[in-house]
Image (cartoon, rainbow, N blue to C red; front, top):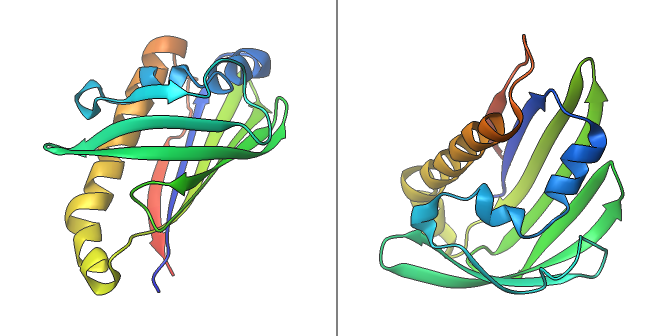
Length: 165
């Protein structure tokens, strides 16, 4: 069983409150997802995030393939972090931690995603060719979209890296 981890950090010249208000609104996930992925929320977006919330949506990660995805918000500490976990969807495991912390001149947003690809060795072979490539594209889009929305801190560092275990 091979586990993968994606780790991303980015800083913005906004308040913790503004960052939290944006990230804790499930409707904003569509804003930071590439349009070609056909992201559509079907339920669970009526209110700001809370522990136990179920969000159902569809997404097309690859042309010709649309999948249902059901996430549960399992942990929330207002203004600091929340965790979403896939309950049903394309991954064998998806555990996504979102952190916000104040830094000089703004906030740092950090994502840590632990995930597992289904289909055993076939999934492991597909990871570098399809999955990792797609995740890099999604997070590059998010990085640019968030800069467009909030600006960028001078001398801020942006990180995106993958690990496997």
